[in-house]
Image 1 (tube, one colour):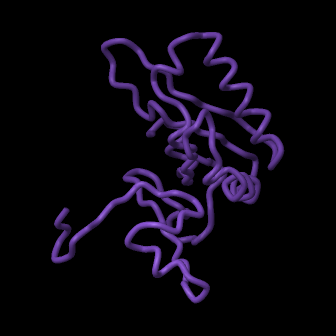
Image 2: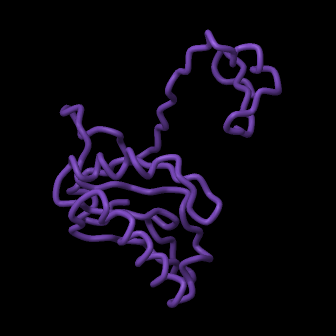
Length: 152
Protein backbone atom coordinates (compact mmCIF):
# COMPACT_ATOMS: atom_id res chain seq x y z
CA UNK A 1 0.00 0.00 0.00
CA UNK A 2 1.30 3.45 -0.85
CA UNK A 3 1.55 5.68 2.24
CA UNK A 4 2.69 9.22 1.51
CA UNK A 5 5.94 8.81 -0.43
CA UNK A 6 6.71 5.38 1.10
CA UNK A 7 5.45 1.88 0.51
CA UNK A 8 3.79 0.28 3.58
CA UNK A 9 3.99 -3.50 3.85
CA UNK A 10 1.89 -5.23 6.51
CA UNK A 11 2.45 -8.85 7.47
CA UNK A 12 0.98 -11.15 10.06
CA UNK A 13 3.48 -11.38 12.95
CA UNK A 14 4.72 -14.69 14.29
CA UNK A 15 6.62 -14.59 17.57
CA UNK A 16 9.99 -16.28 17.11
CA UNK A 17 9.53 -16.83 13.36
CA UNK A 18 12.75 -16.79 11.35
CA UNK A 19 11.34 -17.05 7.84
CA UNK A 20 10.27 -14.40 5.37
CA UNK A 21 11.88 -11.25 3.99
CA UNK A 22 12.90 -9.96 7.43
CA UNK A 23 14.68 -13.19 8.45
CA UNK A 24 18.08 -11.75 7.51
CA UNK A 25 17.51 -8.83 9.90
CA UNK A 26 16.59 -11.09 12.81
CA UNK A 27 20.14 -12.25 13.53
CA UNK A 28 22.13 -11.68 16.70
CA UNK A 29 23.00 -8.09 15.71
CA UNK A 30 19.42 -7.09 14.91
CA UNK A 31 18.00 -4.11 16.78
CA UNK A 32 14.38 -4.34 17.86
CA UNK A 33 12.49 -1.09 17.49
CA UNK A 34 9.39 -0.66 19.66
CA UNK A 35 6.22 0.18 17.79
CA UNK A 36 3.68 2.55 19.28
CA UNK A 37 0.04 2.26 18.29
CA UNK A 38 -1.82 5.51 17.69
CA UNK A 39 -5.60 5.25 18.11
CA UNK A 40 -7.77 8.34 17.59
CA UNK A 41 -9.30 9.47 20.89
CA UNK A 42 -6.79 7.51 22.95
CA UNK A 43 -3.34 8.44 24.02
CA UNK A 44 -0.45 6.58 25.59
CA UNK A 45 0.28 9.55 27.82
CA UNK A 46 -1.72 12.22 29.58
CA UNK A 47 -1.72 15.47 27.63
CA UNK A 48 1.43 17.45 28.36
CA UNK A 49 2.47 15.21 31.25
CA UNK A 50 4.29 12.31 29.60
CA UNK A 51 2.74 9.83 32.04
CA UNK A 52 -0.19 7.39 31.95
CA UNK A 53 -3.66 8.15 33.25
CA UNK A 54 -5.58 6.02 35.73
CA UNK A 55 -7.83 4.71 32.93
CA UNK A 56 -6.49 1.77 30.95
CA UNK A 57 -8.19 0.85 27.68
CA UNK A 58 -7.92 -2.79 26.64
CA UNK A 59 -8.60 -3.43 22.97
CA UNK A 60 -8.87 -6.54 20.81
CA UNK A 61 -10.17 -8.53 23.81
CA UNK A 62 -13.88 -8.75 23.13
CA UNK A 63 -16.17 -8.60 20.15
CA UNK A 64 -19.70 -7.22 20.19
CA UNK A 65 -20.95 -10.81 19.80
CA UNK A 66 -19.15 -11.78 23.04
CA UNK A 67 -21.12 -9.13 24.94
CA UNK A 68 -24.69 -9.99 23.89
CA UNK A 69 -25.26 -12.91 26.25
CA UNK A 70 -25.61 -11.77 29.89
CA UNK A 71 -23.87 -14.83 31.32
CA UNK A 72 -20.92 -14.55 28.93
CA UNK A 73 -20.69 -10.80 29.67
CA UNK A 74 -20.56 -11.49 33.42
CA UNK A 75 -17.84 -14.13 32.92
CA UNK A 76 -15.76 -11.69 30.87
CA UNK A 77 -16.25 -8.93 33.46
CA UNK A 78 -15.20 -11.26 36.29
CA UNK A 79 -12.11 -12.48 34.37
CA UNK A 80 -11.00 -8.90 33.69
CA UNK A 81 -11.67 -7.78 37.26
CA UNK A 82 -9.68 -10.69 38.72
CA UNK A 83 -6.74 -10.20 36.37
CA UNK A 84 -6.56 -6.41 36.69
CA UNK A 85 -6.85 -6.53 40.50
CA UNK A 86 -3.42 -8.21 40.52
CA UNK A 87 -1.87 -4.89 39.44
CA UNK A 88 -3.71 -2.36 41.58
CA UNK A 89 -6.94 -1.17 43.13
CA UNK A 90 -9.77 -0.94 40.61
CA UNK A 91 -12.19 1.96 40.88
CA UNK A 92 -14.49 0.88 38.03
CA UNK A 93 -14.73 -1.20 34.87
CA UNK A 94 -16.81 -0.31 31.83
CA UNK A 95 -17.39 -2.69 28.94
CA UNK A 96 -19.80 -1.02 26.50
CA UNK A 97 -22.39 -3.53 25.26
CA UNK A 98 -24.15 -3.57 21.90
CA UNK A 99 -27.65 -2.11 21.64
CA UNK A 100 -29.58 -3.10 18.53
CA UNK A 101 -29.98 -0.15 16.16
CA UNK A 102 -27.67 2.12 18.20
CA UNK A 103 -24.02 2.94 17.57
CA UNK A 104 -22.44 2.42 20.99
CA UNK A 105 -19.26 4.45 21.66
CA UNK A 106 -16.33 2.28 22.75
CA UNK A 107 -17.97 -0.97 21.68
CA UNK A 108 -15.38 -3.75 21.65
CA UNK A 109 -13.13 -1.97 24.15
CA UNK A 110 -12.71 -2.55 27.87
CA UNK A 111 -12.06 0.41 30.17
CA UNK A 112 -10.51 -0.19 33.59
CA UNK A 113 -10.23 2.75 35.97
CA UNK A 114 -7.60 2.30 38.65
CA UNK A 115 -7.10 4.48 41.72
CA UNK A 116 -3.71 5.62 40.47
CA UNK A 117 -1.90 6.03 37.14
CA UNK A 118 0.93 3.85 38.45
CA UNK A 119 -1.51 0.95 38.96
CA UNK A 120 -2.83 1.44 35.41
CA UNK A 121 0.71 1.52 34.07
CA UNK A 122 1.61 -1.67 35.93
CA UNK A 123 -1.48 -3.36 34.46
CA UNK A 124 -0.62 -2.10 30.99
CA UNK A 125 2.91 -3.47 31.20
CA UNK A 126 1.59 -6.89 32.22
CA UNK A 127 -1.44 -7.13 29.92
CA UNK A 128 -0.23 -5.64 26.63
CA UNK A 129 0.55 -8.40 24.18
CA UNK A 130 -1.10 -11.15 26.21
CA UNK A 131 -3.79 -13.32 24.68
CA UNK A 132 -7.43 -13.24 25.72
CA UNK A 133 -9.67 -15.74 23.92
CA UNK A 134 -6.97 -16.21 21.24
CA UNK A 135 -6.73 -12.45 20.53
CA UNK A 136 -3.64 -10.38 21.37
CA UNK A 137 -4.50 -7.57 23.79
CA UNK A 138 -3.64 -4.00 22.75
CA UNK A 139 -3.57 -1.33 25.45
CA UNK A 140 -3.68 2.43 25.70
CA UNK A 141 -4.65 5.09 28.22
CA UNK A 142 -7.75 7.28 28.15
CA UNK A 143 -8.11 10.67 29.77
CA UNK A 144 -10.01 10.21 33.05
CA UNK A 145 -12.42 13.08 32.32
CA UNK A 146 -13.29 11.56 28.93
CA UNK A 147 -13.87 8.20 30.62
CA UNK A 148 -16.18 9.68 33.26
CA UNK A 149 -18.18 11.53 30.60
CA UNK A 150 -18.24 8.34 28.46
CA UNK A 151 -16.37 9.92 25.55
CA UNK A 152 -15.00 6.59 24.34
